[in-house]
Image (spheres, rainbow, N blue to C red):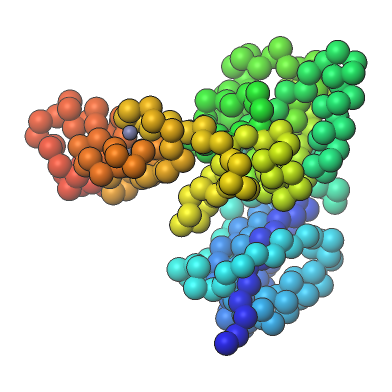
Amino acid sequence: MSVSRIVLYYAFTPISDPQAVRLWQLELCRGLGLKGRIIVSEQGINGTVGGELSAVKQYVRRTREYEPFSGMEFKWSSGGAEQFPRLSVKVRPELVAFGVPEQIEVDEEGVVGAGTHLRPEQVHQLVDTERARGREVTFFDGRNAMEAAIGRFSGAVVPETETTRDFVAELDSGRYDHLKDQPVVTYCTGGIRCEVLSALMTQRGFQEVYQIDGGIARYGEAYGDSGLWEGELYVFDGRMNTRFSDQAVTLGRCSVCQAPTSSYHNCMDRGCSTLQLYCEDCQHIPSQQRCEDCRARIAADPQHPNTGTLEKERRR
Ligand SMILES: [Zn+2]
Ligand SMILES: [Zn+2]
């Protein structure tokens, strides 16, 4: 039996011709039989691809031969090509869709003005040092609020965001201005969102912004549930949630009955990607499995009592 692997990676580095890099990556992956998703932008590259171990090794080596990617870190994980429906290599204006490509400057060092990277143990050092000086470190969640519903850093600020595009308005709302002279540690799943978020915060006058190197994933590998992290981690694959140990607490609450749960479910309307948390008992009750928005639309229009009509409407 052949061995398969997945690699995840990103690099913020100036790319003058993203189309050329896209074509090169497409040919490289095709030739090696890899599947996955790669985004190329003038800001850099972000990808996750899987295939046979020897092919993935070759992919990593060949990708690093391109000077701007020579120092890029690859995170290896179990799995293979079968985890992905296809190979997709796209050019986008941003590596992470904050909706503000014009506000982000990237040079050979990465995102200009990004927060200082902290390794997991440095996060603890910072918290201890600041506490000794009488100051508290604030953790700032760089994910969508729904992801934070089942797990977050102790005492973290969770902005009201449905998508990453909502962050700029949140930062500009004044709601977090009291943190501008405080030490703030941003975090997200694997670190990429915070590269941009921390720079957007610095631009807006936050004076002491840090980000966790490798995100929650790396922090969890180091400290599991015995550090400052609480709960479970939302992940972007079929599992939806994962825990670092059996000691993980259940922070999520069923959207119907408030019972503790970490179990995400999509709104039952196809085409609606809203996620909600349901407990064991409530997840089987169909009438409760639409999100608030979809429920409101149905309630407002008796002519559209079912999913099919809603979908047609959406397509218009
Ligand atoms: Zn319930
Ligand atoms: Zn919905």
